[in-house]
Image (cartoon, rainbow, N blue to C red; front, side, top):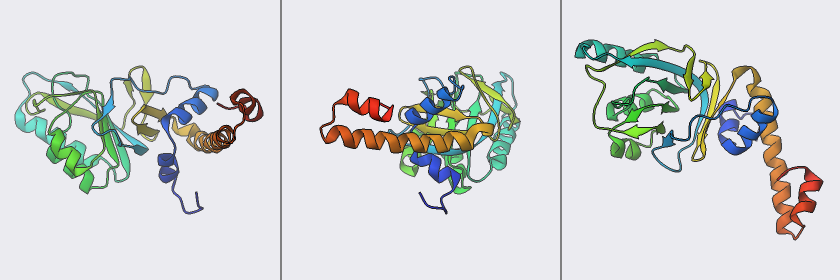
Length: 218
């Protein structure tokens, strides 16, 4: 870490297990999203400030209206943000090829949705980070409308506000409340440094219980 590292760069160097442990110790034990939300690619990592989206299914929605609302989502998502969507739906794809390419081009760090994705081969080739719950070829046109931007959403009992932070890797997705983000990151970096000392001691032949008692970490 150097003095020029951004908060997002430092957060991306962390891993969700260490961050979760720190948040739990700080009194935030329920910050992990459901285990059903998985990355398109195992190596995917996302870290950054959250921009939230929510919407609902509307069975008789005009196709033009649905696309106006969807492109409004793409227009509003800020550069360097991580878009997290609560679609309140399990029937359509809430991310696809053109949308992923648009977000990628506009500098969005990644997209996490408690819903579906399609065009997954293209998105993998593009390398745009996406976490989702399921896959389907059915799109949003005439079916689903994005209705609220950067307001509080809830996924799996976890409240997520615009301006919170998120770290996502193969183990899962952890939400960091904005008011404790600085302290949580600093503590996570300390935990990782201590874990490195424990690892070094064990590889050098130290008994694991002795290493734990010395560093109070395992």
